[in-house]
Image (cartoon, rainbow, N blue to C red; front, top):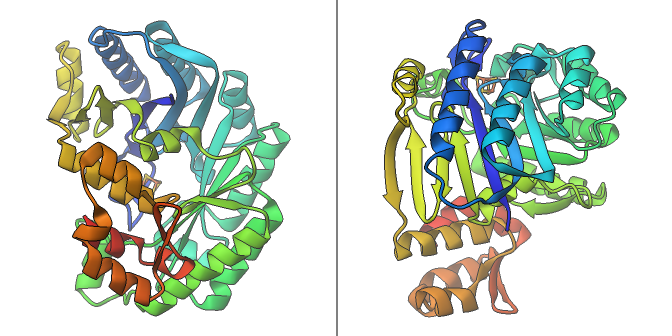
Length: 375
Ligand code: SF4
């Protein structure tokens, strides 16, 4: 059974216009933060009664690649001191190309980082300017080549589509470039307009116009075809991997396995309890330094919530397991949602295949809408 450890590093050099992850613009006091998160790791391990074996460590954020290799190593040492980590655990650092050079990437590798997730987002200068990224296309490509030179054999590249600046050709150019680079894993997400972000404000002020839904679906369909032809298997609605290179850590979330999160705003799921940390660095610091866990809220998942998660996550992967829904939750989805399922089926969005309700290629572009109708 997979189990994950997640570290949320809440610093960014600059806040990107679309981002709603918790992070603050800061480039110092990292040592202090490392001491605090290390303390949180110690405090948490005292509350874990059994001795689970963790199969992945994921440094996310924020921009974890702002931390020096020594700082990352201190956090990893604290994890190893407090938990059992599998010898072949996947260890990922999310990397902003504007924050690393080849020396740093080599040093990360030397301390046990074996997977990089590079936030490229686009191979077009216009797109990067629109997204207010701190790096150029050249920085992103240099980062990727440096990582290969440093012998990383498990690299993800993040891309974003359906920007207001996107035409079909611009997105196809992006896909052609990523296919040329041959990363082991690709995450490609459609741009979303999250409340509270400057991008959302621009939308409200009518300064940006989102792409038409049909074009968004078309770009998504092009992504599926081009990446499939290039030998990438789609194993989650927005994630594609070469053989053997699926992201273990993300699968921990998608397969409802347990994980512990550290750092402000980090989420955990353990023994059926879901809980999340304070999303404010100062308050987080105060709690942990007082010897308290910085938990902001928690819930025990009810049976209905677990069933809803199965539907949501199932649709994003290989389909809803209809037999399991009946046996584990006493829910006959085909009966309860007859009208909705017939309508989706007539529109070519879903099929029933071997006791699974699966999305078709067209349906995948509307996965969230279909999930919410079925939940
Ligand atoms: S670098 Fe990443 S975490 Fe930081 S603001 Fe940009 S998208 Fe958000």
